[in-house]
Length: 140
Image 1 (cartoon, one colour):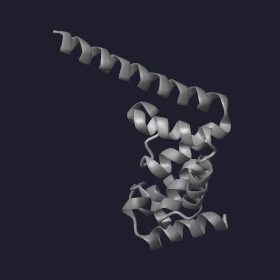
Image 2 (tube, helix red, strand yellow; image 1 turned 90 degrees about the vertical axis):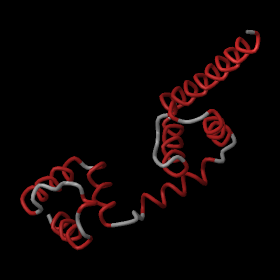
Image 3 (cartoon, helix red, strand yellow; image 1 turned 60 degrees about the vertical axis):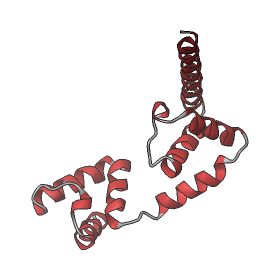
Image 4 (cartoon, one colour; image 1 turned 45 degrees about the vertical axis):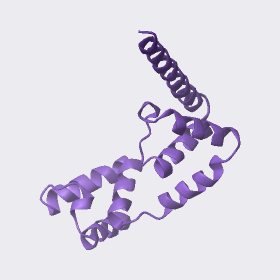
């Protein structure tokens, strides 16, 4: 029984620590726009885009906080900016455009409905089709 009690105490302490780390990251994001961007960049480049700190382990949360405190997040932010500046595909460009611009999102939806049989996921279309949309959208 003593061992079971110890295991529960260790588990509870670990959970409390994780909860504290999650809380610290969330508080940072709320209070500091650069911290919020740093977490976003870290998540996008290191965590496959999973931005919920609750879905990360203690080590990952600690690594982020250490990097952030020591200014080491700058390299990750540069890497994330580079990825954002040069999407892997034309389909990714459309997805990013949809996320950043409500007018573009509506334009893509209208285009997909009228020209692509209602299939709104850019990843389901070839590069030429997506480029044709971008050309039309950019020309006004």
